[in-house]
Image (cartoon, rainbow, N blue to C red; front, side):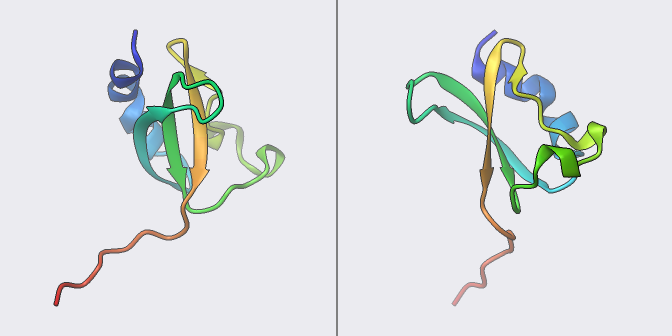
Length: 78
C-alpha cells in the first residue's frame, strides 16, 4: 500500500486524535521516502498523551511523521 492509500484509509481515525489539525502525504527529509504527515498544534511528549491519542509510527507499512504547525485559523480576505 502506498502513502496516499494509507492516508486515505486512516485519515478519519487520525483526525479524531487530540491536537491533530490535518493529515497529508510528503517526502521524508532525510531518506526521501514517502511518508504520512500528521499536523499537530504542538508536539507533546508521548508519556503525556493518553494511549488512544498517540500518533502511530507506521501505518500500513508507511512511516508517519508528526509536524507541529501551531494553531490553524482561516485568513480573512481583503
